Length: 358
Image: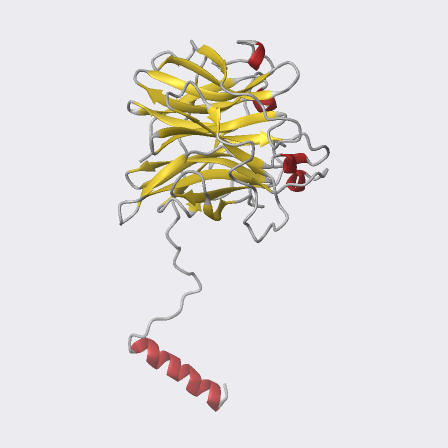
């Protein structure tokens, strides 16, 4: 051993003797991040509880459930398709304690005229009280050929005093699929989410609408053709919507939601916010229902890929290929989920319940 090596060894021994800790080749393990928890949804054995065929107005499909609780009843707003494929906003009601027996009231208003944004479809209802009137926001589909998701070019508004009799406020949409610099030429837009009330310090009420930005363009690639983002906008009067933001987008490392996220439906909990939504990915080639959490209702967390998949397609029947358009309401000490099955509602609307995760 040469003199320099010998001195270096002696220096190391001196440091150890003085109590200086040695560096170990084994690093201390970081605390494990708790796994993301989803609700344990129990599907109703009677599903689908609202199958197509209650009348000529919904013989083709029952899709896009949105539920209000009125006294001891559920008022279910949904989109029904007639034999020609035209889709209109419809209403069905039932007692809260028996979701298998619905009274169907039929369409609430007609489609738009030739060339309008809602010429062929009125779908994806969202009902909320704004001021002294009920507002029903719906998504229109035009007759534009070959444009795919871009044919959904506006959200319209109808108003009511009693939740039964509705009148459109305009032949034009009140909300468009613009306002996002990432997609400057986009016009595709769809509903699917609720409205939350955000009280302001000065006493005003700010309304936050959760909806879907449909950015996809016709393609054989699923991730291009079906591209969608969950977004929000804000309003003080329910008519003019600003402050548009993306709050949830597809993620490449989760193959069940690497193409699209839609219909983010949040609710308040003791520890923040929870939400259900639907994602499209290459695993199923269609929608499946997922969950997310948030501390502020704006920034959402989904855990590791696979952890937030809450209600996947299952079995060989009505929901074997897809589960989508989720909507959640509180029912006593449990949550009730309503959602659609195969063919975007072609097999109807089903339900499931779960104990809340707070």
